[in-house]
Image (tube, rainbow, N blue to C red; front, side):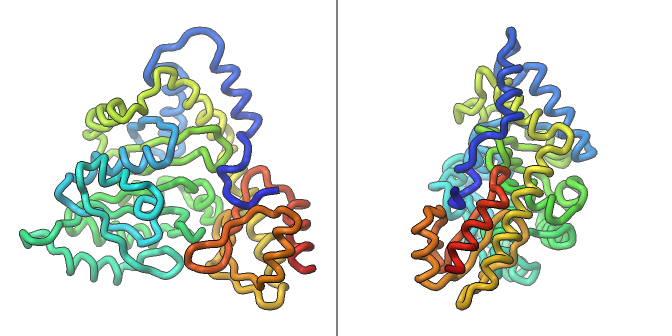
Amino acid sequence: MSFLSDTTAPAHPALLEALVRANEGAQASYGSDSVSARVKAQLKEIFSTDLELVLTVSGTASNALALSVLAPGDTAILCHDEAHIHRDERGAPEFFTGGAKLVPLHGDHARLTPATLEAALAEWPSEFVHTTPPSVLSLSNLTESGTAYDVAAVKALAGITKTRGMRVHMDGARFANALSFLKCDPADITWRAGVDVLSLGATKGGALAAEAVILFPSVMDRFSALQVRQKRAGHMLPKMRFVAAQFEAWLEGGRWLELAGHANAMASELAAGFASIPGAKLLHPVEGNEVFIDLPQETVDALNAVNAGFYPWPHGGFRFVTSWQTKPEDVARVVKAARG
């Protein structure tokens, strides 16, 4: 029973079965295989548009590679202060872009607002030689506080950046969870809203190691540059079909949204159970599969006694993350222990 992270969950059986099927016979190397082609076709249908993509095995690689084709090294990338690219990727975006500066901004529940973005752009004018001109806005959806940007929010933020000629990147490590919560069309919250590149993660949703960088039509001309960086970064895998096979099974029949929906439901159930504990305080709205909550020390001790894995969060409180594998009985057991 672990609520440490959705990355601690095992791979979904359907994805493991897909790996076994992909292991039959020979296939072309480096992403030229038939499985990768089918995944591209799946994604075109899901996002209702033409697109290009490369596959990787880590979210950090996907974010860094995506940003590397959007942000020149002498420009800035605006992001939330809690963004994974800022807090958790050990300078990978700066390294892969050749020095692009990350400029972290503040916002409640890890979300940026148009007012905050406009203020930041006023502080970083493109025409002033002494400042670093912003070239990219990076949004995380879900955010690092487990909240979601809805379609209107993405449109508003992207619209502001477009007036400055900037591009928009979306870190979608938990994109499926955001979609499941918002119940919107994938196209509406990405390219139709002004997103140019999406880092789409399957690993947190049930894959072993499967991530994608999706270039939407506005930046498809950068595909060759992206492939070059993919190769130099060591993420152009010779047997790419095994990454693609995970994506194919994950996307098939809407499985990715079904698994995310289950994880979200378990998080909501967990939050509801914690709500009855005296002294417990929910720190962020539960809009995906993460619960951030402040708990009394006696409750923390009781949860540790039943080995309910969870993280004390750096900014206070505790984080509980549910996954496709989280069972209702796991949630019930944790809530029961918390209530004492």
